[in-house]
Length: 193
Image (cartoon, rainbow, N blue to C red; front, side, top):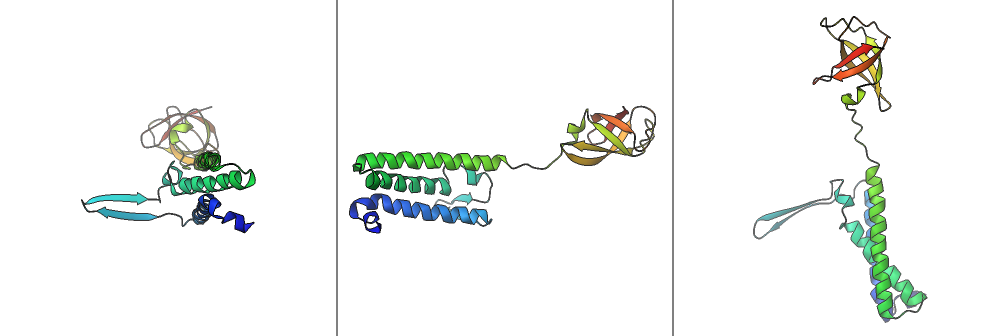
């Protein structure tokens, strides 16, 4: 079996298949343990600095990346080899099959990485999202103009405590209120519900 992979006529597909698979597996393995980032600075004779920073999260998901090139080469090799050796196709048809399979693997990899990238979230809660939500008075909120209290509000399944003021009378602890406004300093204006 290995003899047919390394026969003179099959080397056009075997070498890219093995090389692409090796590079692809190494790069994915390094990324999965968090050391797949490559930082390199190149200085060209005309003093133009090109900075390639693989540490940026979007660099891993660009269309032309090391992973996508390795996936294409791997797909070209294996697809062409299967067409050439398994189905007995002529060289032009095997090359077209390899090119198509390589492009398909690039597309699949892009969709997978895009899906992984979309799973990210910042975890940041914007206080303006509290407008209209119910809250619980955590520390007494004095009457209008007499100071600030604190309220506990749940925004997107995260409980947060904010300074609060009211436009009406005092609000005792554990009373239910509704957030009506958020000031520039993230102080919530609340009313009794």
